[in-house]
Picture (cartoon, rainbow, N blue to C red):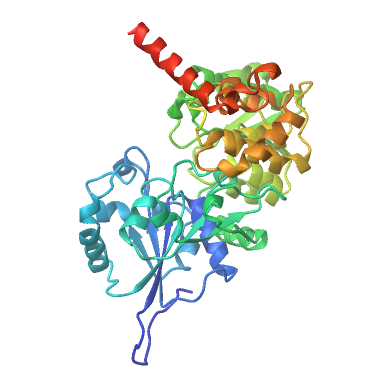
Length: 455
């Protein structure tokens, strides 16, 4: 049943409007679960502001028109579109000039009927547009951030303006890796708050029940999750096709004769054709699922016997929230390809590599001890964003001194460790040099001279 914001008594204080921003169904389900768990105080008006961040929003389905959105709509008084508000600009690239911020805030308040309302914001991916843009436009609004995936376990990807960062009150996240504490926004002492699993499963169950057009899936099949990594420039299309084939072969090697492949919605059709050819060669019953539904819907509709992927958040959802067997593949290659080192996908890939079992069961690929994960992520966070998290240096040094070895070395690049003066970067007898300011200046000058000579 939809909420109502009608009041019969005269208003003596400004009305509170909460604006919840989402770009994915998964994020919208997380918001619905947080609302159902009373993690937000009551407000006179709750608005869902939908972002469509795809490369060509005009040709893709917006969040509020996707299958299963109906039950989520009931958590809000109104659904608005950010794309419509800033048309013809793209949400991922448009930001107003600083001098124009007051003008655009007045424009949005008029467009959305906010008047003099006290606005509270609930945002995802606050480090970048469009969430950052919304936070900058409503300059005085308190902010809650929620995690749409695994990136919240890693560091804030960009140095956030204190005028935004100091307004963040909480980081809401699902407990996808029990015992692991998010690093995101800890530079502003933002406390993490877990969204109860039971509430998430309830909201996802309601979404699943409303999805009508879903083909019947074979019982006890292996589910392969595509991510379209070539679109991110991490793999070539040919390498990604080969990765899918490895997924299929790995599942077959574990005894699965029925396999379901869920491609990324934007992936080219030839990915499926390559798998179909391999499945025919192996004598495997392959179903390619073309419906644009969440993987979690499949977990609800037909519990797969195995879920296989690279570093998809759905792997962790399957394992932690649905208690399904999972396996990862391809993470080692991705860790070699991710550039720059600060790439925000690094922590999710490392977590998949460290926490999930290897599909191919290779020697030396054992899951890392759970009690070392927080220290691992701390070390990664410092090496990725040392300027944002300088207090993490001692913890990073301890972890690298004790745990850097054949199993974990792929997570850290030697050149990066060297530039930061960390264990594992340079021979021990020269370890004192990076801590010497004069030595660091000489190295920088030498590098600059080397580049100048090349030119």
